[in-house]
Image (cartoon, rainbow, N blue to C red; front, side):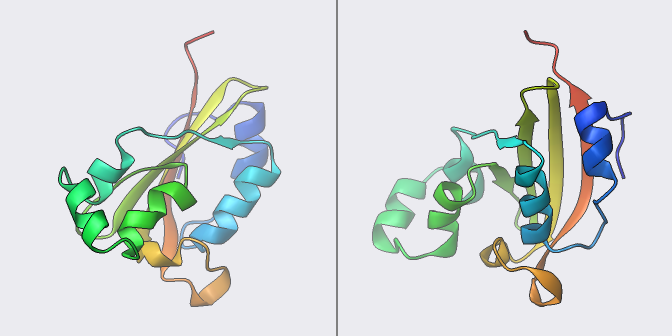
Length: 129
């Protein structure tokens, strides 16, 4: 599913990725191979909405209010269940952007029981030093 040719770290990771795999299994592989989450300062606004402070103060246990802190790679989720995440591999200077589809509450559920699956991913070489 990659849209650009992966470099060394991306090539190694590409060998274990499968569309439809549980997001938690994808995340475990990514972290085990030395990739680090890239936090998005706008995550809560992108996931909950611009009024995230008010929403989350009224219902702090809402899954969408907690997920940006739990899943630091999360950048955004759409209303139809598509969520975008980003990772970086410092040693190779590569970036990984991936999309999961399903129930964000299952971000940490492994195997076939997960309702959040990996759907797409792409690698790029960072242009910054």
